[in-house]
Image 1: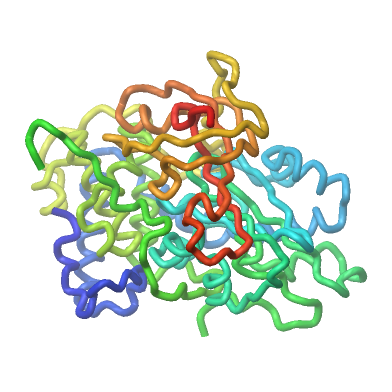
Image 2 (image 1 turned 90 degrees about the horizontal axis):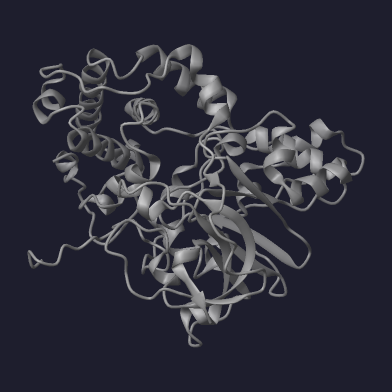
Length: 228
Length: 225
């Protein structure tokens, strides 16, 4: 049975924090490494996969398809009222016009934050996420705490991200239960009128496009792209 | 557990469950936490391209893993992939254990080659289809979701069963995940965004947060309220 060699989690109890493989012992890591290599070998020998395609897939999601794509979409919407209208009316077409389309983003919907409404996106059933514009989902997005809690206690989850919204702001949560994928259009930060579209894109964080964060303010330090 | 009543249970239907751990934010760009994780991602995508199974069948394979809640996400993907390989006969247990081909390959309709990756990803697999009948509900229609659990893969979460909501968006007809996952074909159905008030979902006793939750629901999940 796959997975039975991972029953060593020392203090599992009823904690459901998963996905942090760096907490595992090195021996488990190499066991997993061997298991995955074995599977890859079988599938290649049987002619089902082209190993070179695996490298291209990985490189694509590490270097080409990620949240900077979405940031370009948002920056364009902030600068160009006509594009913003098209984005809110038919996000799939508007986003395709910037060159982003395809797998796990075949049907896109953009939902706009306003002074009165804050949007949040989740997939409680698995990990549905708009890949062409945000790339692969972060671990927390796929984790039990986020999926279980955000629909019922959105303000508590936002606190985990250091975000506190006024009580007067309504929270609109989109559970991606089918093949429609949602992109949050955050509010343009105050004091950003003088910035170029490219500079605006730098203010757009991944989390602000999921709804668990807000865009950076002009002049604040850049988003950390790697763990310290 | 009676042999005459086959049951289907998803271990992935987490919405509203009593999980109290905090959510741990992660820096942008921190995609993987072990070297094998990107290989599992790529293997899953490449095997999906063979069309030995569809995406709904793969979600079903993952959500029914008995140890779903104990596994990390890429462990779930690896276990789901192994399960699908065994189920379709594309690989057998001895091959997976020994890491070499011991039995003939099954026929597949496509191999994803390195040179085709960009085009295949950019094309994706749209699920919108021609509707076979007019939409039963319109924007603003009041609906009630099914309350009985489905004895198969479904995409109506438990927390949204037997609840009254309002149609907020109409998305056209889409491949119906329930039948598609079972190998019963696409059977396209109208898809709607249905919005629920928080008191309807969590009861009047739950402290109000000023929130509305929606799910995307296919027409067979809904009846007029």
